[in-house]
Amino acid sequence: MGLSAGSGRSGVKSEINVTPLVDVVLVLLIIFMVVTPMMQRGRDVKLPSASNASEGSRGDPLVLSVSADRGTYVESERFMDDAELRTRLAHELRARPERKLLLKADRELSCGDIRRVVELAQASGARGMAFGVDPLQTR
Image 1 (cartoon, rainbow, N blue to C red):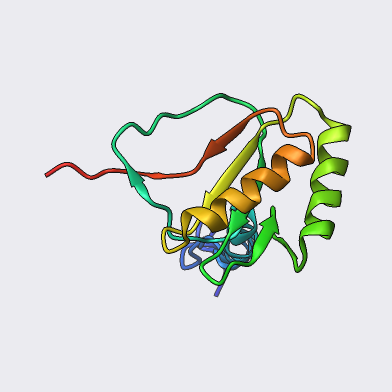
Image 2: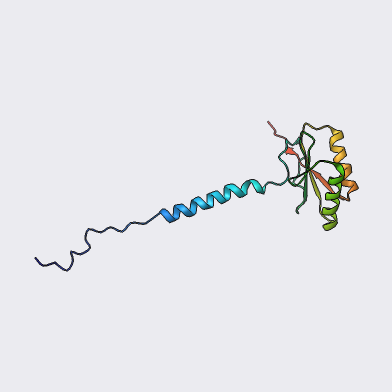
């Protein structure tokens, strides 16, 4: 009727509780799903293709986008008229005069549409501008 010294814990197994780990992983996944779309700068436009596409200069350019419906955006903020756009560009370029512009224009736009935006940028004080293109796919 007595208990032996070694028989107290013979049937107990230790298991790892993975619930906290799963909770942390799911929270991180949600954070990445929310943050990733915000990392893209400018508007999403269909860029033209070019065979001489280069990486361009390093730095933090001001992204100026023109969509197929001729909507003009600085980063992701839309501007309805040219005066507002010119004021915003002038303000950004006064704050950082060495900053370059990256123009992302939809491939469906005419040269006149793009020229209008380039002239506005130059009138606002832009000293340098790069054009966003997709590299031409070779077959």
